[in-house]
Length: 115
Image (cartoon, rainbow, N blue to C red):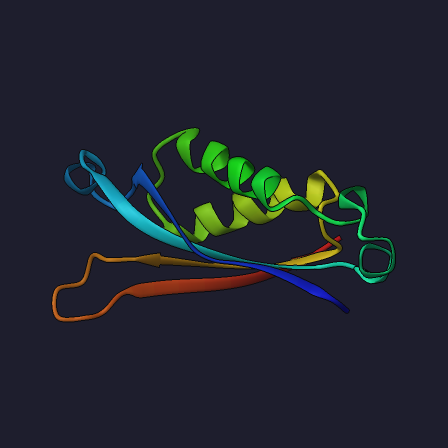
């Protein structure tokens, strides 16, 4: 299956297990790998034959901004669900990175969902 990747999209949201952590906006990096057939897009060079990167980017930002959450797992699951619900991919892998553990580069979750 062909893939479209958006790597490390920076978003900001209120997220964290404790109310104190959720009180401040935090930076997340979101990577999306969408699987779909891109043969027609390659043959025709037609935008309508692919998934628009800007459409997906706007969708991710919209989902993240909807509400505060406790877990990055919830962010990943909701982003994947929104992409699949709009049939922008037949399968999607989402990685969400959070920068909350002192002494570590980041904490991340990765999920894969299919139609």
